[in-house]
Image 1 (cartoon, rainbow, N blue to C red):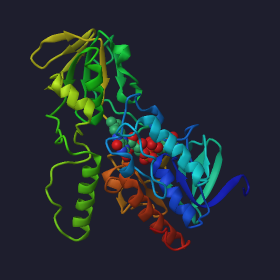
Image 2: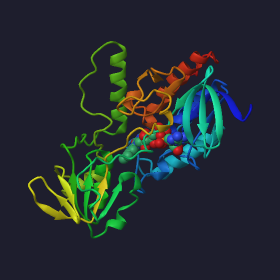
Image 3: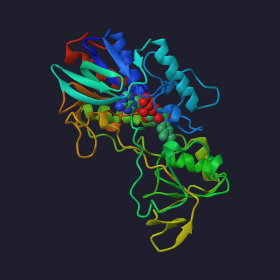
Image 4: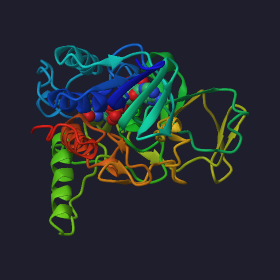
Length: 360
Ligand code: FAD
């Protein structure tokens, strides 16, 4: 501490899988660093996921650098298995995670960035922002939304189907969250699946591993100056996990186009038909939660930060890690974060003249 400020070479904001992966490589290079995490417990966004959530990749391809995720007995790892793994991971490597510490602002300082938090100020030569996407659930604007007297919740607040038993429920959103939540709610409730376009279902034998291999091939092709192969399958396409195959057997995976407005007890479809519903579950994704960077002059009109290989174009002391394809191929997945974190840490250390190389 110097004059009420902690001085570090590198500060990582966020202690989820991305922040921990960066921490692994920083620790390996003997860097002077700290990880600041807003949550009061380990695991990043994972403890907030719904009860039945399972990974769509097996444990062996869902590991952070250094220590493989322990295998699971029954197929793909559960939410709680991932949380246990991330908790044990930070212990194992003695990662210096400070929590709960919420970063409120990052500002320019002399030869450094000033990281302002609810627990004081950190000064760092470089900052890696790894705050994930879960902090800002997105619900699209729909006319009359406030007049609807039924229940509305975002997938981030969804826990289990039990509370919807016997109800009439709309599940909105054509990605993996929407598909998985629909699959279980449709067992206990009358459901309709509302999507703007036909969801893209992957073949039954394609899981997260294959998607990651394809993302890797696309990166390699781009690095080699070739046009990436037009192979089907992106990380947003729907993985046919067992629960979804079972839902397909029950014939509940059909979709309807979006309703045009809410009424007080339901929704109105574009042809004027009204239907009463008890609940609407918005599986409509997240927006990057980058409010802590708003005074740094780096946020673009779309709410993102312009980056070149993870480094902010407008602020060379700032690096963005783990937010999805715009910060690196497959960077928002356990399978993809190792490569992204390694490359980011190498570049950060070079930029601040620290120890060379973060290792393999
Ligand atoms: P997070 O886990 O969100 O962690 C960010 C951390 O930053 C949090 O602890 C938060 O408290 C902290 N933070 C945020 N703002 C601040 C701030 N201002 N100051 C300090 N700290 C802050 N991923 C996979 O890898 N494999 C899968 O098979 C997989 N399956 C999925 C299936 C479904 C249906 C869904 C919905 C998601 C799935 N995911 C999967 C995605 C995964 O849940 C997220 O991508 C992952 O949690 C992102 O990790 P992260 O560390 O970047 O962010």
